Image 1 (cartoon, rainbow, N blue to C red):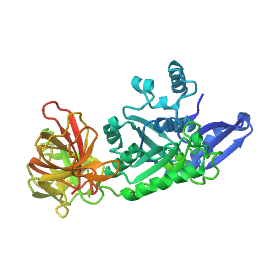
Image 2 (cartoon, helix red, strand yellow):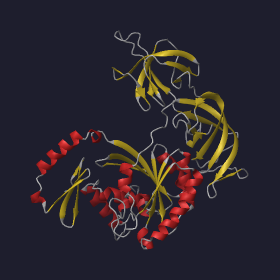
Image 3 (tube, helix red, strand yellow):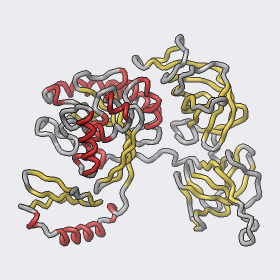
Image 4 (cartoon, rainbow, N blue to C red):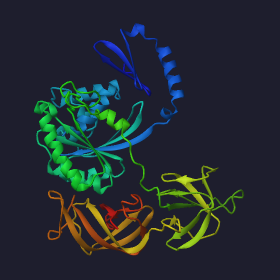
Length: 469
């Protein structure tokens, strides 16, 4: 039976039991020499002394790349080698592989759960997986590689901190590699790991790896990616996934698991300008809270504390924060990502869709917006077409005034002539909202700078948009 304690990993190596606790490896000749109670007791003491491990950080990352680059296999191998799957899951993928006529163990079946995915051997929808190591907790979004499922990739990557882009060592940089790298930068993902996969099929050649790395570095430089990493891997056989490869001793960098455990994510998004979109009004109307009125929502940027001056948008009325609470408990301060209720000193008409902001750092308020869109729907974009836009808790109608240009993914150039926008196209457009709306540039605040377009007749999601300025 698999041992999968939160701080204890187990694996077999040369018929010896190896317990890996943080950075300590205790080797024993056999189970009879290992006193588990003493080991766990030592572990508990170790964790009490090391306070930073008592609260693990969470890393959200997505896998992307072209078709058959091995995205699902990499995640399957990562879960398998880190002992993060159970026996019944293992048995399930073994039996599924046999039914599909696979001769070898297919670890991609761990994430490809749809019948169509398993039959075709491709990823269609976004698959989310969760696991943890002694260093970190992870949420993985395994996204599809086919061009017709680009919208799924955008959806899966919209909330992550890190993108893992796979490249087939036999094929090098392809159109989808460029497309997904560009989308990662468009979504303001500032950390990217490029895994050059299937190194076993090019005889683990260092020259092949370096040539592909040079091509990717040119792409990353053109897109101005802040932080890039390059790892040669064989997801199928586990080379440089969890442990270092004996076949690529020329590579002295970190393994994939070691890198995602230790990579430092720059959490400087949405931390400056105070933003609080109002979701609902809390008005108990009870004898105990007869005059109580508060506004519930999630802080979308900066921080708020009692006594702070705020401006209510769109009315532009001003007040001060009387108190901040959550589940009846008063807070001294609320930060980005906190779901709280805020009460004000003045009685102001505030409803869902309004926003509280610092008077000194107000968002842009306008009816005219220029933004980048990823078109999701089979129906093409129509200049002059009317759509519903949703920005946080705010809604408004809009009309597409113009398509300024369409991105040519092959060349990463702006196409001003062919501006017909179909499913999975990326374009820069200008819209006019039916009322003044308030927003920030997406690079400044990912939450208040994003929106979705909805067909008012069918309620279908048509596109995702990122405000450019």
